[in-house]
Length: 204
Image 1 (spheres, helix red, strand yellow):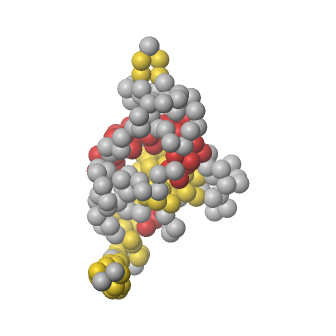
Image 2 (image 1 turned 45 degrees about the vertical axis):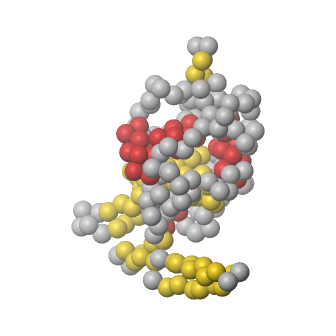
């Protein structure tokens, strides 16, 4: 553990950086709930439970990856915003109620780029992590991928935590996803190294 002390307005702020080495891999470690109320265990449990199937309590789509990521966030306790306009990419809104016999939702719930805009609009809750997603090992964070080329995210994966081989050694982070449904694959499975990545750390 290393630390640096800064004196600001006669107060001492201690900045602590914790580095953990697991099987030769440098891993950034943080508490399970880094800042707020996000229940990472519940988020990961939901992702693992529904990675290969659909929950009828939510709307379903052919391209279901962002819808699934939204469900995982809600399973972890992240609250939907107060209702406003529906079927909009308004970056201040994120919700999907069911009433009058149909689903009403914002595009931030189901569309990758609209979700990115919502995350960007709430920096206190979502941090665009500057390092490799393999270092985000708390589980329940969201990886968006610009798999169509360019910078616009088109796909979302749920990072579910570190994976270990039968020998007990860490090998890579795991991920779950919908659209092409996958369960506990390595986070970088079938990724083109030229694609832009948006690893979002949930800080709520």
